[in-house]
Amino acid sequence: NRRLTLASHPQGLPGPEHFRLDVQPLPEAADGQVLLRTLYLSIDPYMRNLLAPIGPGYAPPVPLGGVIVGGTVSQVVESRHAGFQAGELVLANAGWQDYATSDGSDLLALGDMAQPSLALGGLGMPGFTAYVGLLDIAQPQPGETVVVAAATGAVGSVVGQLAKLKGARVVGIAGGAEKCRHAVEVLGFDACIDRHAPDLAGRLAAACPQGIDVYFENVGGDVLAAVLPLLNLLARVPVCGFIAHYNDTAAPAPGPDLATLLARRIKLQGFIILDHYGERFDAFRRDMAAWLAEGRIRLREDVVDGLEQAPAALARLLQGGNFGKTVVRVAGG
Ligand code: NDP
Image (cartoon, rainbow, N blue to C red; front, side, top):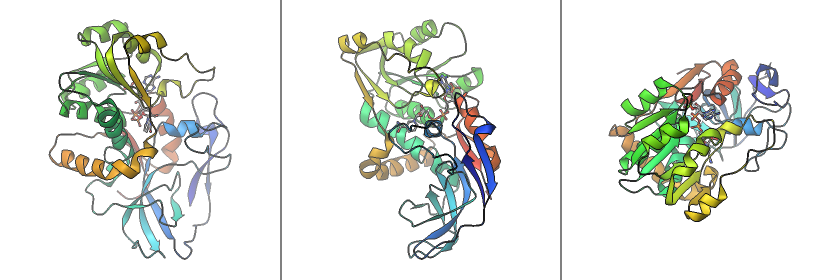
């Protein structure tokens, strides 16, 4: 069993030296357990936060020497659990390793899926994050202007497309001309702004002549600074993440301009998607499967081959080198 464990805590961007690849005997399934083989491993920004000595609060940090955590699409290779059969595919939390055991409590049977890796992206946690954050928290109305950064990524691409389904005008922000072209031509956004080109604030203002009613916060940093002066009265800001700051080594960046939030009665709401599975996940899966089947939502994956590539894939995502939902193909597929 190949495993990637935490060798040391990164300061700034994680590199290969922070991870250790070792080989252990295959774990054995006890009574009531299943043995799982990892087919696909999800690479997500939150993983960076779990590599710090003190975690982000919503999940425990990875201990030194511990296997890096992560969602997986896994195949049941041996079952000693009444609810699962050898051969079936499940959504699991096997982490950065080839094999793992589970007592079944954290598994979701996937049934027959044409593209099982989507259970880690648009049909899974990132898609669900977009669904709850945009539809439940921001509630965009027809004709409103919605802005989302990391616009071609796992969460942002679904946020923008759902906002279009709700009749909003959608302006994306993405890293580079090719991502921007994809956001407009494939995902159907009304406009997309390259965050690497000069005068982000000026170009964003020009792209949002009616101001901004919903800003789906994925990144923080320069993008948030450019958005704030454009927020309209009663704007909503679901606070989903701050990826621009995950590798910061200095003290936290100053927060948003509180005077603007107050004067414009802006609703700024943080959320952790883990809290919403109970009430909303079934509705999300039903809706998203239908939208995908109807071709109303498009999903792009950035697939990397080989478990040993997982550290580099995480570093690439934290720098914007990924284009679409990052997934590591560990076996099969
Ligand atoms: P993505 O697939 O969007 O990949 C990350 C993207 O972030 C990069 O491709 C890049 O896009 C952008 N990015 C990286 N560095 C910067 C930077 N310095 N400034 C601006 N943008 C940057 O990742 P996800 O869709 O999985 O995650 C998006 C956000 O959602 C993250 O902040 C994540 O932590 C958060 N999240 C929160 C959840 C919750 O429960 N609250 C659940 C899931 C995700 P580009 O090159 O286009 O700028």
